[in-house]
Length: 237
Image 1 (cartoon, rainbow, N blue to C red):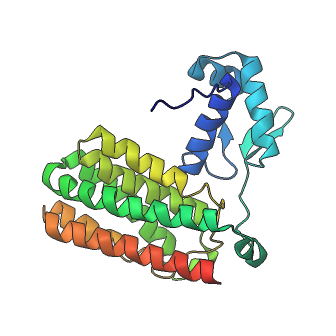
Image 2 (cartoon, rainbow, N blue to C red; image 1 turned 180 degrees about the vertical axis):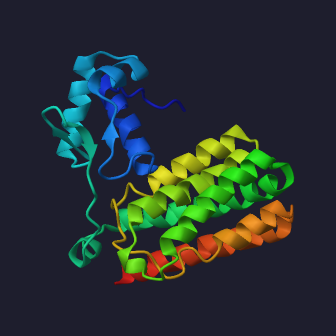
């Protein structure tokens, strides 16, 4: 069977690309995106196409456009889902979140095994930097005062860094898709971090550096399972 071809307007593809970099934490709330002219050059589209995409992203409250000399295209902070929002989640949205975590088990547990076998000194440096950033954010012990967006940005770079260390481009793309997809069903679902959010990163990193693929996989599995338990508690209210 062949699937039908769905036409996608160029501005919609621009929207998808900008959404993706925001969801992956490459731009944090308050950061400015490149100006229209530069976005058009980077993406190989017209400025009119970029403006149409910007209007759509403004409507989604992902960005706001500030006029004037100090203005620009600014990423907005995303409101965490309220209790009412959580209760209103559809069965499809809840299942989509569970599906993402099942996919994480399949992809990230194998990627971390390969990372433990193939990593380089450059990989170690990148992963250590991301782990250090997460440690610094949670070091005060007050997870209610931590920027969730900032933590998620470092967390995303840690997990993508593991995929990069696997030296398999399919794993890299898959983990990027996972990280972006985690945002999609309900947006920013947590207003503060779990007290255990950073519990497994150092053991995972240590296992990778020691080239202990069995322990690296076991710790990654526990890490994802712990995140899934947290999500289930959240969904159950």
